[in-house]
Length: 113
Ligand code: 5GP
Ligand code: ZN
Image 1: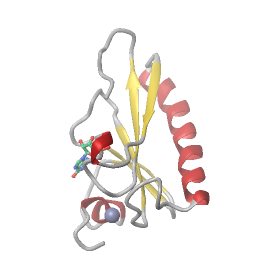
Image 2: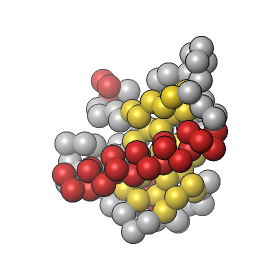
Image 3: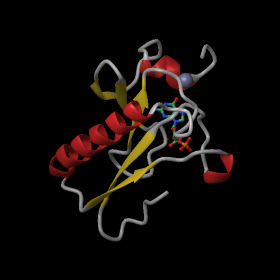
Image 4: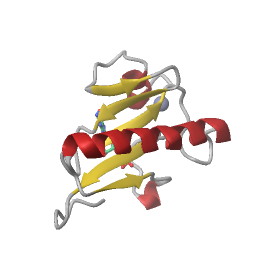
């Protein structure tokens, strides 16, 4: 989609702080982090939400979430992780290109979304 900011970030047209990239996904740091190390998994293809993304790609996205939080837990030394995925304005979605939030948490940090 030509007017989608996450399409432009995912395909590298707009530079971003990229933690990981493969043929299907780019993982970036969130511009307005809920906590230090808040990252977003973006598919390179445009799908507005979980209703639209193909099952296989949604599955790959969750496996990638597992890999990243497992590795980053050790790097950041955090106590836990929120894996969050919003669908629709009513649910708090503000960018209508599917994404998975990865939010590192420490005991008592009050950083959840
Ligand atoms: P949503 O509310 O749609 O689930 O999450 C959108 C997220 O994207 C928010 O956490 C917001 O801070 C982040 N965000 C919005 N625009 C940009 C951007 O241009 N770059 C990056 N890295 N994050 C963005
Ligand atoms: Zn898009």
